Length: 406
Ligand SMILES: C[S@@+](CC[C@H](N)C(=O)[O-])C[C@H]1O[C@@H](n2cnc3c(N)ncnc32)[C@H](O)[C@@H]1O
Image (cartoon, rainbow, N blue to C red; front, side, top):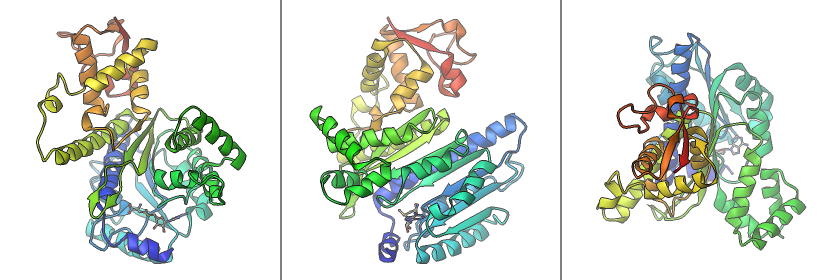
């Protein structure tokens, strides 16, 4: 175990870099939104960052791991004139003895380098489950927060995690790394004893898992479909607006493979956090497509008229069933499993992409705005009758707009 962990922290691999970019995008927006809302309400409620699988803090090649990246995100708020929070707290848990030693040293050094002496950091030595009562107190004690859950493989009991977060879930953003390849591998040998690990992870009995497996297979589904089912089932116990699963790949011989190995699952009720995460994912996919095309951009990929055709098709398909508010439509577009292997950046419905797709459809008279007079100020252009970016700024804005097919 010690060796695995130490080996992992020798260097940051390309797929880990992608994970860290997505993590930073979500965390930075999460803090900024909390800071902004505190200011607008003249409050100073505190923000807590919890890293349940914190690692060593740094890789031997000096790349920063999640706890140090988080500290760098907090630096901006060390200036109390830019910060509404009374304080920012950090709690890190690490099971491996060698890693927690490195982590403590790395965090203390980084705090010193950035002159963040008033940043409080609590270290949980050992598995986080043994500290769950203390973690629950931390979750409860601050309104705002972010929980990062980044196990290597199957070292998670989803129920225990949900129990922890459910202490005070509303204003917390959660990011979970799911090693779907490892899970699919175990599922592939459903009659072998290791299947218990999957049952423990998803809190399901062996007989129920086998029943679900047989049912999905009888409908032509794959092992991936079973895992997606299990993820949805576990997360449904959390009352949050957006659950976004983006697939990321792994590194093979120093290069990114074209495959879906992991899911990064973002659970949030903040439209802005969902948007930043999707924007960053689209950027990474565009980078992949560009590299695959020898850095050549296709005209179709860059034109605002043709770029988001697949998103337009999805919007039409969803609206065929019923008229929806922009909020409900965004939920349906966001709450899916996005593929690293089969998507390019144009298939990702971040704010600008979704609005361009909807405005193209309005232009081509495929869809219409229903009762536009009820839209909140600044959401629809008076001149063009098209949606403006503010329409996806907050949930209230998105709920004030209704769209239907013509
Ligand atoms: C993938 S690494 C974490 C990487 C880190 N989040 C980063 O971005 O740099 C997973 C870490 O979780 C630790 N770990 C495994 N099970 C754990 C548990 N139950 N509680 C706390 N830490 C655990 C492992 O020792 C390992 O260091």
